[in-house]
Length: 105
Image (cartoon, rainbow, N blue to C red; front, top):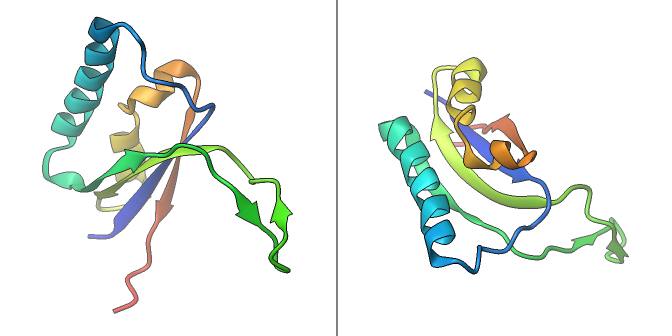
């Protein structure tokens, strides 16, 4: 069963100052991870700021704002897309890119 990298794209949003709102966000993430069960290979992490370099090593504009990732296993890309449907970032107008990883072993 292949692994799929789910990358989250959108504006970096700070955690809410209100503890109740922050807890509600964390519960959304927990519910999503719980709904995927053993399909979660790596729960991933949120990202903060990023930078990019070009082929010559000079600074260049980052191609897209990646705000985090998760790795899941699924039978095929359609199954991975179905798992991504519940990702909490989608409710904020962000997107999830699904990429199959290639086993190099």
